[in-house]
Length: 186
Image 1 (tube, rainbow, N blue to C red):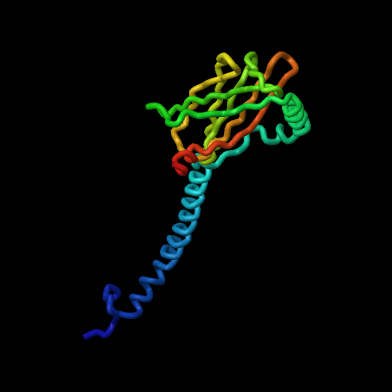
Image 2 (image 1 turned 90 degrees about the horizontal axis):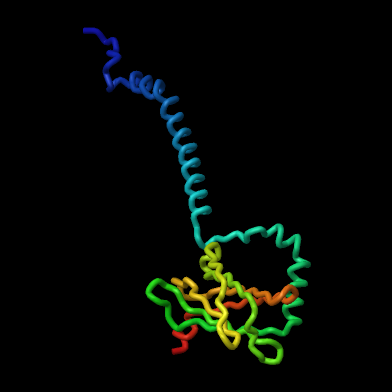
C-alpha cells in the first residue's frame, strides 16, 4: 500500500492549500472589481438623484443678473418711486384642472386704478422653484387684471409681478402667498 498523496484527495491539507493558493488572485481580483463597480454604481445613483430632484432649482442666468445688479436696482427704485401698489387675490379653491384665478388690482399713489398697463407674472411654488409658471394678465375695468394660474400644490407660492405703461414706467413687485393660510385659520 502506497502512502503517496492523491492529488484529488480533498482531505489532504496540502491539496487544499494548493486549491486556495491557485484561486487567491481570482478571489481578490473579484473583490477589487466588486468594490470599483459599487463605487461607479453609487456615483451614477448620486448623479441621477442630484439632477432629477424637482425641488432643486438653479436661478437661470444668475451670472448675468449679478453683472446687471445695478440695473435691476435702478428699475426697482424707479418702480418704488411710481408709487403704484398691487393687491393680489387668489380664488379660494383650485378648479378641476388645478388652476386658480388670480386678480391683481393695480392703483397709483393717489389710489386711482391703473387700467392701461401691460402686466406679466412669474409664479412658482417654493418646493418646486425649478417649475415656474409665466403668463400675461388680462386687463379689466377699474385696474383689475386676471389670469388662471396652474396651482396644483398648496403651500407657499412666490409671485413676481412686472408691468409697463408707456415707454418710461416700469413696475415690479414680489410677494409670497400661503395658500394654506385660510385653511389653518378656519
